Image: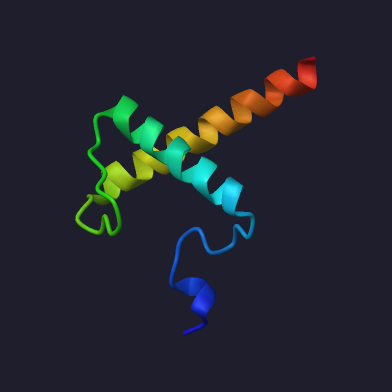
Length: 70
């Protein structure tokens, strides 16, 4: 297994960006009422994990659309 498969954020090579995405994920999870732990969160249901990722994408698209308007 390639080492890049070990970490879900492994495609992000800028440490600041990695930390920003981690904080963003934690904010979204909190808004949705999903409790994340530091480290491994493999006990989340597919629904919980999917709702976090889906909401993150939705917010990123909304932010990009706002930037494109201005």
